[in-house]
Length: 323
Image (cartoon, one colour):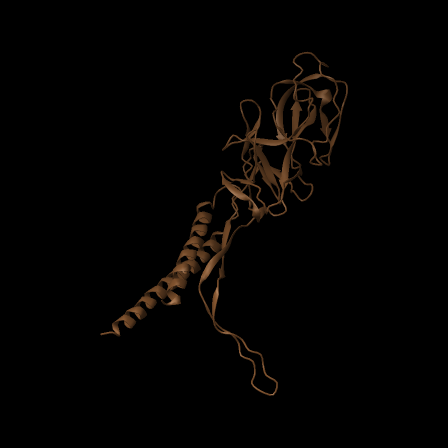
């Protein structure tokens, strides 16, 4: 049987896989935080018709091997983690990452990772993903977790935490209830370099009026008395090989054996990138590139189908020689 027939069948199959990848990219051109895929090909086994021979001293020269290729295969389907463009939304809880970090989401049991910062506070005051309800992970001032009610100083002063910047502190959900009274004497401030500062004494009961998030991922509370303080910190994770992560759908990923483990810390540390509040990262799909790849893939598919047609005609000619 003709080798070209089977080579062309493999070519059709693998060009279809590449077209599937392109179709998925184009479908997600407006998906927040989406990372484009790319299919790559490689040739496979070659049949040796004649081996190579070395040159002979004073005699004949060397001869190259004679080989016939037996087709191709898909070598890899890669996720391209280049940054997408940042689009301003004006929504303070929308967050975009400008470098290699990932937000960490949890259902209480399992952590997943995402570039989609479409967040909001739910009815209980927990920062969650709008699409899935998974809880955004970070660190929060342990003193701030307990409202003082109407009794000032009812909570002992707790040292201002480092918010796990070394990655050693356990991650927490970020629960912040606006309108509640809190002990602001336990809440650290923020300086011009976005560095947390120790809390100011004495303690007092104060009403939390509003919450915002800055570029360091710090959650800043504004109280009725005019006090501004750092209430918590959004955590980011970084992987040695983000392209090795598994896609779960819903814009989330999980680590794989080849992605490495998550290195967790604050924004703007360890190459995790700064956070842009009030904005979302758009898809990194380049439509012009995808359309070009579509044309090349279509022509490759057509060429392989033509090989099948011509191979069939040659076989038909061979069969008709009996007549």
